[in-house]
Image (cartoon, rainbow, N blue to C red; front, side, top):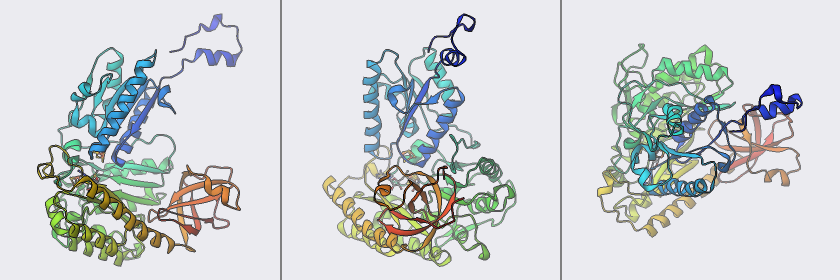
Length: 506
Ligand code: SAM
Ligand code: SF4
Ligand code: F3S
């Protein structure tokens, strides 16, 4: 804290006075690992800390409160969080004014007080259900308490929250449900995020309407499995359709409970959400990805949800039925193919992405070839692929981890290269087309400006089908949140480049 100056004794100018009299607010630094769930949680933490008068620090060295928001989905992710904490401890020991350091997220939830033994110098641990307790936690640490832990799950079935967005943003992550009841055999998430529970449709619609009024133009609904949205929530309003189905049978929340397609339609028709341009969601599970949700992708004139972006991230994990069965995914690959075929029928331009695991116990070369065939058949824009990592406490951890690391890595590299070829072709097929881009900000990499005949800064945004598009503009104003039409001129396997259609920038 800087010194407090008695104003009556100070002879300086007004501005000197202001500079001296204001104690510099404490600053915070949050390092996030893991998925969008953790990204959204970190944003919530930032808002909670800002409400306590703290400001964000650009560098960790300048922060008085440091938080690691950790992920435990693979062993490597845990190592990253712990080695970051190790470096922070050295920094803390060097400093005269020692910062307080805490860890949250899925690592905090799972390892709780054990983390104090593993990480000397750690002050507090919190979990995925106790983020809103952060101000209280920090107060207790600053009052001199040692080893503060807040990592209990909230045992009630109610889930009510309001989205917190840090600063002006055109996009917002909106949690609609939390937890996971699927228990895929390899996955630690049900143990770190707890049981599934959902917000009500009315609450989410009010939340989105409020965000739209602040300038948000795109929302991404978050949940480990948004298909389960509404499960366990008694019927609040009688909405259609009451039951959900897919190729496998009757699925999802039961009749009488709310469901995800109903939520999409409620947002789409609420007059307060008319300025919302795009709705996305992540993630869902093929087992209960319903026909009713696929129908939301139809053109609005045929009963679809107008604001739903033509993009779907539907994790499949493997192309082999034998492996899917061992993973406890409870569906066959043919069901996935027919879901994708129906979706493409209704929405030919849909951009698809997926998650894949290679080297699951007992995966053979033939199983792996099935996964490559899946890529050929579905033609994803993008994949997120991982080498299997046994997670203690999961059912798969009891199986012999019999695919050697070298083979796992070879398969992973091969899969990523194979997909790169597919993505390059798909992206190149967009050259010369005009695409609508929602601008997210200035591109981190400004190299494109050095080789272009145009002058200005490189901006980046996404198409409705979730492809990244970079373009140059000399506009002196921020373009964040604007929708611009870009004519695509170049492509890579990851992004498109192009020129703004003349007259499109306001
Ligand atoms: N609920 C989402 C779903 O089912 O797609 C997200 C699950 S997890 C946060 C994200 C991805 O991590 C999974 O889809 C899976 O591909 C991968 N993953 C989970 N556990 C893993 C493990 N033990 N080893 C390697 N990858 C894993
Ligand atoms: Fe993990 Fe499966 Fe739940 Fe996704 S659906 S979070 S992979 S258990
Ligand atoms: Fe990691 Fe937790 Fe997400 S384990 S992937 S941060 S739900």
